[in-house]
Length: 321
Image (cartoon, rainbow, N blue to C red; front, side):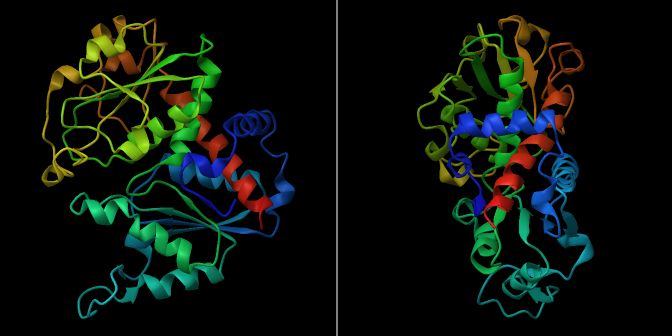
């Protein structure tokens, strides 16, 4: 596996899940694969779970790890070609990337959407420069449009906690005080749709439709209560306006309806449903205290599975070297 961005990169999901549960039984089984190999983790944005889980997964596989915070521990980087670099950016990404590639065997990149230029964000401009110029296998640690390590961990969690052969899984929009990217909901929908044993419903206010490349085939229900009825899993996540129906709205908050906050009344509509969120979460905005602290909350097991999803990805990339 030379790159990991979308669900199709992982190959057959059934085998990927089997690999995940094998690794979960013995996290150090494949240490030999990473011996004398180096992972470079490059962060253009903040991280907690991605940073810790990816580093732990790499260490489990016997790898050395280099972590670079671009905004705190490196020269300021220019990302655009043709720019006269007479400002505060001292180095161009097109020189920095191949230099980074000289010092490692695998590269993980985390770079969020700017939420001002939809075409730029959805072209995955920064990530694709790493794929093109680094000379190394590259995987996404969240990008402008996707977060596949999170979605894979979400799927593992659902498989572990499902009481149904084909659980009803609801991806619900929830309000937020800041404009957030669509990466997590995009990937969550994409991965759930790839698993034919999941019944996915997406619910959100009108005008917040996700891009069809990620949600094609999903049922969309604008009535949140109808979507929640009989659900086995509720996955709450805010996203800013994707600009699908109105490109001028891209990256904006065009709805702040607090009735979409997931509370005990919402969860009472479900089939004793489990609550999920990728974290970090704004309590009493996305979800109320009592829901996230309830026995049906899976946010901690879900976060723990980030180590497992990343271990599978790194294992497969090491095997391809």
